[in-house]
Image 1: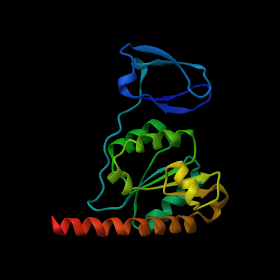
Image 2: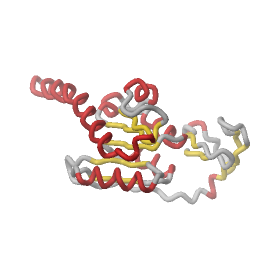
Image 3: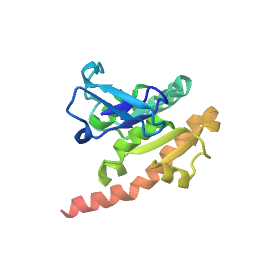
Length: 194
């Protein structure tokens, strides 16, 4: 279950096996420690349906709340023939990431993005290896590999580089292609032997 604190606006996920069977329950926010009352009867969130894209299409998912930046990223990806799915609602983003397969995830660095990365951490290694995760509006230097590693993503793009986002995205996509090529060759060789 996805929870957002009404006090500090932090988002987090409670595993289904930890949710009480009662209609209402109370818990403290792990960040600000303020009480949160969860009413499961009033959950009016719509169910997200699986998305459909052409077979073998490259599909990117955007969770970027900065509208101008999201628009520029979307136009850049579409100019590359990449299909784009996007949302700015955290519950919808979490559902989409859980039920759809994306080749690229572009997330704006935030507490809510951490909840999405929490879902991704549960993926097996093969699935995770095939997805290029890029964190934008990061509070670090662009394309810094250690910062990307610490955040659990493939690339980071600094908020200071928003003006050159297309150029930096191009570099990030190229880096991922270089990273994934040896894996693809190895998988192809294994497939030919088997």
